[in-house]
Image (cartoon, rainbow, N blue to C red; front, side, top):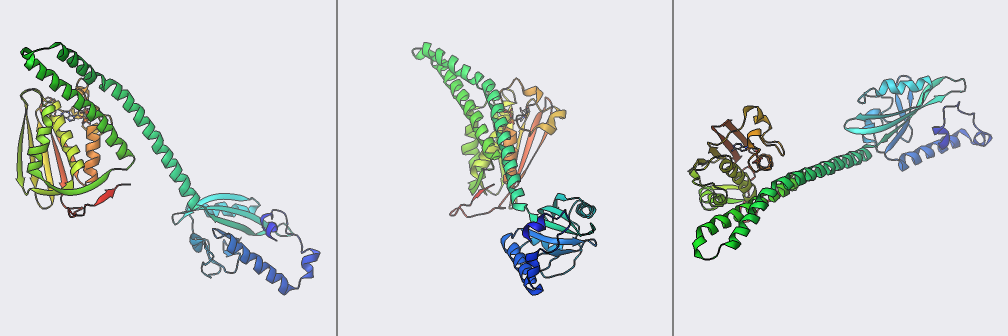
Length: 399
Ligand code: ADP
């Protein structure tokens, strides 16, 4: 009878001589046994018959409605004769086609799960089709695995594209600092004695700046790769904001500053914030180095921090080249560089990473800019949103 169930496009045969030899009670027992075996051995499959009123009767010890198809297990409820609920899409009209003699194979979704549905007409000896054999197989796990694989493949593809873009960009961006390093090294070699002490300083600081530039490019790429792979950890600790700016950040900018550039820093409010040191560092150094890079010699960069119980607010304002108005919308895009910046070294990755980091900290970043007048970036980071004590730092990996 098992194979007969799946091969019913031809009229069901009359009981064979052997079957006829069983008493009706024995035949019922055999059928019940078959049903129990089916129910126990194919837990993700529901087999049943569908009548013309679209009522489903499950084969097995219990009868279930299609509502229970969502938990396809053998423990489904005992309800009888339920109408098939509307699985998403055109399930009912498609299943009805089986009453016209068509064997239907269909994939449907319902209640967030996926089903493979097979409907096979059960022809009576006179050719009439009053019932359809339906096999509902829950393929949600398969589908999820498939979707996971496709997503992983897409991610891999995107990472591949990212890497090749980086190689293109790096081969261009590496050239300038490497040439500068080489030229300064040759010149340093040719200077001997104290007469050239001034020149030596100029060239060693040029070398340092160029190496710093190269390191930044590599760091940006590594940060981006980590972000793309959702592998950025957020570890909060106490940071004394005014000290952090004065002692660490502003000093770090010395290598980037052009002649006569000044960073004018002011702090307002509380001192201690609880934030991720690495992310905050990356956000602020990026904004400050951009402000310096896109401004002229002797310019002043105004940096303000303001900390209250709710948030840390930082503004970085310059009087530099500004961003063309029609390019404001693209400025956080990966590898994006405004047209007035193409002659200035850069990767177009910094702001993209900065925006992602601000997002990881639950904050916002905005800017105002006028071409040839200057740009002001404002970062707001919620204070204490993921508050933890310094003794037991919390490590969160964003997956
Ligand atoms: P990069 O500076 O390496 O090009 P970013 O991602 O940091 O990359 O910045 C993206 C673009 O945004 C820059 O190329 C530049 O066109 C513009 N930009 C960013 N900051 C400023 C600024 N302070 N002044 C003018 N333009 C800026």
